[in-house]
Image (tube, rainbow, N blue to C red; front, side):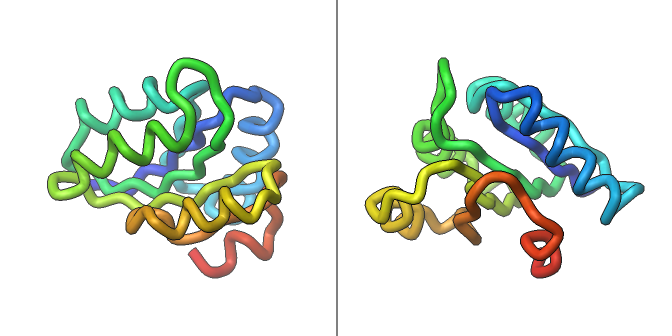
Length: 120
């Protein structure tokens, strides 16, 4: 079993920036990026033996972050994962909704900063 970091965001520039920040702090980390929740979910389903640290955007095409969280909750018993929402949304309703998902460990505003990675 290995730990993998997944960036799930439809913005390739954000994935690049976040990837650079994570690699700077954790140079040996296994890091993958997906442009929507569906691709991330398919990867997790095909590799359930891994442990996942997921940085998840909310607004994406095909499968948004909320849909991903609902779908991955069905897999949660079989998969070890921790989700950190990383979004541009500062809407209090989104923050409250995030608290309803037991896999969500934090709600961060884009872009990720060094201080966001300290507590992981």
